[in-house]
Image (cartoon, rainbow, N blue to C red):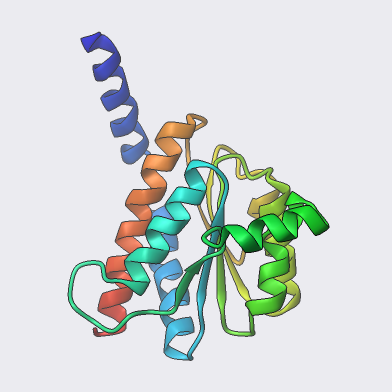
Length: 189
């Protein structure tokens, strides 16, 4: 049993050590994109499925609530939070439209959409990113593996170099927390 624990810790450390200086520059750039949007009155939208859905809600909460210090709330919404909206759209338009329909209705130029996906193959994330791009909304991907189709749809992305869903999700939260701290610093809050 201890070997299983050791294996998970070792895998986690290997993924952390594989984050390159280029990845760190991308993290800084993502934080700047988010900060610039918030400075101009934009909203940060988040979306994901399963564990990535939970991550999107978690990170949206870090911005609208607070991360490290008391400050004003920042405009941040997880598109998975309203079950009535999700089920209405899924019922009437299909699950592949649950996020794109919301972006179409709520989004505006200078907003940011962050799609979190370990595979990069989720049609509802792909459709949301395409909708956002058509509206001149900046798009960011928190990705894993080879990034899938989503990689080519994002203005900026962070690609976790792993094919383990658990390791990718752990790093998405780590990167998300770093970005939240950088945003607070960049906004001077």
